[in-house]
Image (cartoon, rainbow, N blue to C red; front, side, top):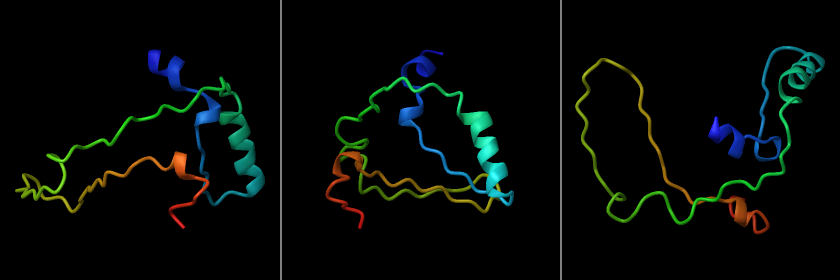
Length: 91
């Protein structure tokens, strides 16, 4: 509840909609389910520094599976890009 009150605001959210339905139907759903979210004009939270330090980076990890699953999750630490939008570093 505290998280919701502190960070839940329409101006810090992004929405992507994909569906087989018509554009009109998708727009109606968006209005029904997302329009009620209040815009509190909050500042997006900023993460100071990087999420991982030098001792957590450059690690080689060997994993022995305990179940027969065919999935792999990989996470790549990247710095935030919001402050770089004017220079467009990803283009």
